[in-house]
Length: 387
Image (cartoon, rainbow, N blue to C red):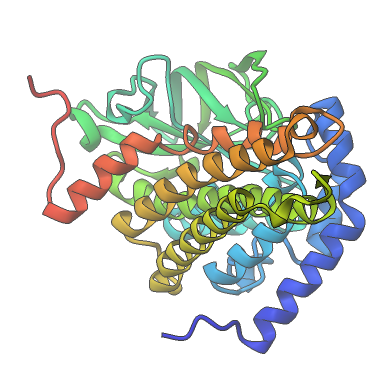
């Protein structure tokens, strides 16, 4: 198995890295200070460079590349900032992929070109006040009435809520219990009866909106059904790819913290010498590097094995779980190595530490991933409700 990037992949990675390091740091600092998402101008710049929908088909305006190339692009931008990279994450690994793989052709032609041009961000709306990890307990209902769909319910913890222009809303579309009754509908911002609660303020993820979403007799055309009742498995297959995006963001945060602290320990002097000369520091640096490389290889396995389709749940869950734990450890070690400088907002590590914790919650918690891994190993799902 060859893990060497091709000449084209290296060129793509280098190009995106130069762009990210040259044009994005000031934008990232502004996002961190204001807690506002990237502007439309930034979105259009991403589109101009082909960074949106890297792995979406060319006929919809995408890059026509593989999930692996999308990983390379996302990591380089996310090293600068989670907030500035989030629109790329959404276009390459978010609900746009559920539309690309499972929605009717008319919806693909209507939505995906706008995603790739930077004129539309599509967010996923899954969790509810009483249905997060227990997603099949969701109660938001979508009733088909002739040529229309009427939606009622409440959603919570939707990244992008209030800012994104459209939402892939998971909802109960039949009276069948559990997963059998669940499908998904596209709802556009501004639709009558669709509103947002107070914006959440999180520990990290500055620039990424989150809020409750309310559906009060929201009416959309029947053509907005992405998958009907019984399509939950398809939706979760697409979500397996979103886990790979989550993994990439975790790795990017950790890698950027590692790069910064590796330079720091070679410049910082204590007791008359660079602190990298101390064996205890060498051990920490080596452990950080080992964990980073392992996480990246698990991610690459998942996306490469998926080829042009969607990843396997077991491989994507292993990659996400390991990277989620790794990024917390690496950013924590980076802060400890920098001492007071790491804890200061004048330096980037405290932001990296805050951002690192969110990925082990978003997209399915660390413990849920471990349950997925065990289920994949024995070939069956576990009933968490059984007493």
